[in-house]
Length: 233
Length: 82
Image (cartoon, rainbow over all chains, first blue to last red; front, side, top):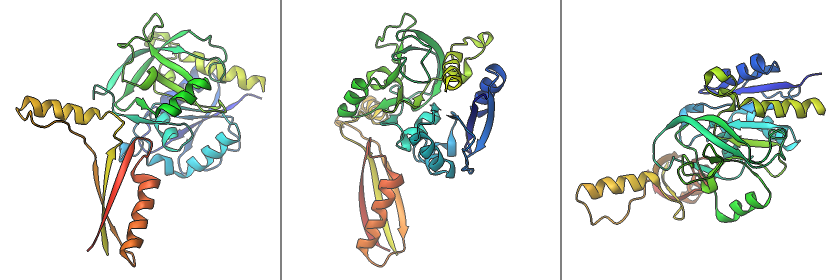
């Protein structure tokens, strides 16, 4: 039986259809939308919290969405080990919900950034990156105003020691230069996972990079890894 | 009725990019005596509570649960009788 992917839809989500397209039409996976007022995730094997501007980003990005009815179910799903991928605003929502540590500040240069970025995969030890070698460079687009990841030094050390930093911003050659850190994130962080390694949050958009005609299909690598892992279960 | 005024500011240890940009602009305006700028949020809550202390407690719960993200923000509450 093939895995069921659920894409959560909040008021203001705008990457939900991109995510559905990537999963259903490109990866040929079973995908469905889940409205934020639903609470039943019993037939879902993988959850994607998409990007956008949930609740208009009022107060703080992701702060209001975190209280949507679905989020209680997402938390339980994650606690039971279910895989959850939060992209961009989805990452911000997972931070606000406490499923991942840290917070997001405005980009260092105070501009909304919309461009291609390079990410270095730092670990294969997650369901999302099992088939990606550490050190491999992926090209994925970013589109955010608040992606400047911050956390205190104790928490940062924990992330480093537990190998929870999954992606770092880098240049095309995979070097984490100052210029490559597009938004000023601490330690070049572009994506982190939780300690149990089943929840991944990342600012760049894998779902917008699944067809080479649109610039890159490196985003498929993450979905391929997830499909590979879920098929093996 | 009580009015609680909540000031939410970025923690001192956290660089404030908005404040930094505003400071830069103020310096360009010739206001070079301003040494630093920090930008935060002001939130007003009208609270129906039995006492000032009760109103404070409600405002504090609102801050810790939603209005401030304590990973990066501090908050300060002042309560006045309306």
